[in-house]
Image: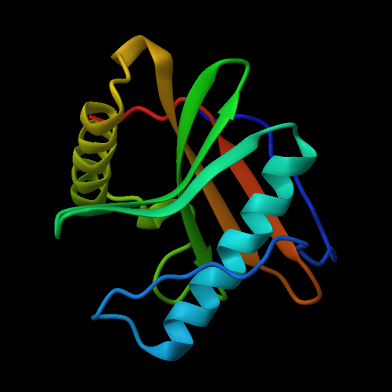
Length: 145
């Protein structure tokens, strides 16, 4: 289910830098990913989410970009950023294969922390670079099939 687009433009994130270090990422990709996640974290904090953890790695099979809480629900976020649409827009990048890996990571996290299925949801944040700003779209309770 798609929700109305939410925009946050021209604002600088206030959260400290994230640390990601997957071996298959270049420094440039890592920096871009960190900047996108900072935009997402800034957005989430403004909407009363409490960020619990970033870049949770569940072995080699998956990573959760942001884990946050709101209204006693744990929310797992996948964040995708695109500067253009030559490789697809940000929304199109959350493919079935990526969803399966993400869901594996979510289940791994829940197992490690004793969370039950009814206590969490999966959200997706797509960030598209525009000429002078960014368009952030938050999809809640994403279908993972």
